[in-house]
Length: 267
Image (cartoon, rainbow, N blue to C red):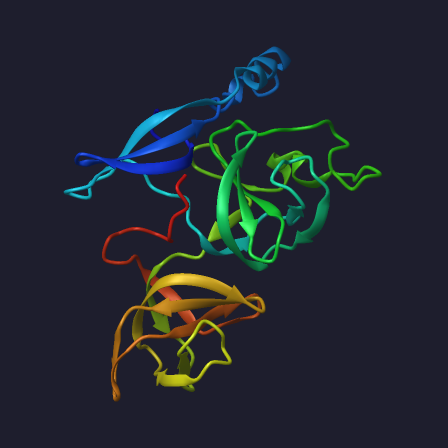
């Protein structure tokens, strides 16, 4: 597998000093130069998925050559919104469209037709990104719904997502883990649980720096779970509100100490 290839992990096990994974590998993306070549697209569709085993990490040293697709909070960035479909396949019935800027929570991921799809916490699947240039496309009428409401994610993605440096396309972006600076001047509550309605343990002051180790979404607001913080009551842990589409209480200032982004899904 070349650098940048995506695959789906089905199960993991430890063999001696290696973490091994049984994986499903989709065909490589269609090159940009051949993206309009019908014969090339047909070969790509017929290539099918391959399966086998791969070493994910050294169980002793922790070194690894792969990184997981994040789970947790995402923000829709596609100009025309992100269609949420009832099933994981791209051609299943569309339930709704998440407008640009909508915050939503992804609880699992998988690959369908070369597109990384996320299971939304409240139900349905959304396209997160398309690696490389292997993007499913349809004719010029792809932006109109059919009578069954199955236009969904099989529209011409290149008109709606953000082009990445590697030629891929982002439809939604994960909220990063790491250090955040408090920009709310009136004392930002740290609650005991994920919900904003759980008891308040302490309040953070303007310019306090905290480390967010997990993100989720509640009522459209991105919530972050903090690593241990030192306050008047001693060492404390809890959750804060980071932002929603109309307001921000903390801003991202740097990655966590491991240099990683959000939590993982096994892709």
